Length: 115
Length: 115
Image 1 (tube, chains in turn cyan, brown):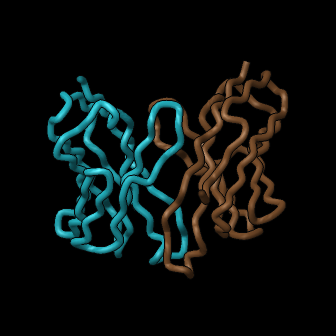
Image 2 (tube, chains in turn cyan, brown):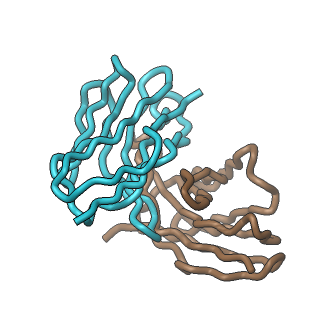
Image 3 (spheres, rainbow over the protein chains, first blue to last red):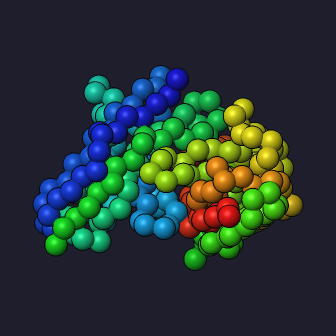
């Protein structure tokens, strides 16, 4: 089945540090890949997406590249701010292959940025 | 701005007392979803509507029902809330897959407390 794996545990880092959150997936065919961000007490906001191999999604200084050879979609940001503190979810959709738009989510990573 | 709106943002109910959560959208999307998200977990899909076609997930308890009276509105009814139903409930929408988009857009969520 389709699944997404995110690195274990919260991520704590200092302001202006480099952020990487690992995401790998298992799926046949050509899934779309997403990163969603959830601020405390809020719903999920789409951060970025990629729909085919080697696509790079980017938004608000965050980037992720769809790597089919390594089945990965790692999220990166060069210089984090305190306001980036949130939970980040990696997700995939097989809708374009099967017409069934169920999102498979990773477990999420809590990111805490310390001033 | 086109958006997904959920009301109320916070709902308190008593054990066994029926409760209804509402979702509306100005995106004119065909598909609407309801998710349950418990603390420190990823969202879990309960069901979705493709236009007026209702699609229930196999493991969604019978206690959860939904109505979609028109394109813009969708309701989640919990017939007899138990303590284990306390969670954040997220509504999401997406366009018709035939239009080539599989991105889901989420509302801010309703935090349900069961006393």
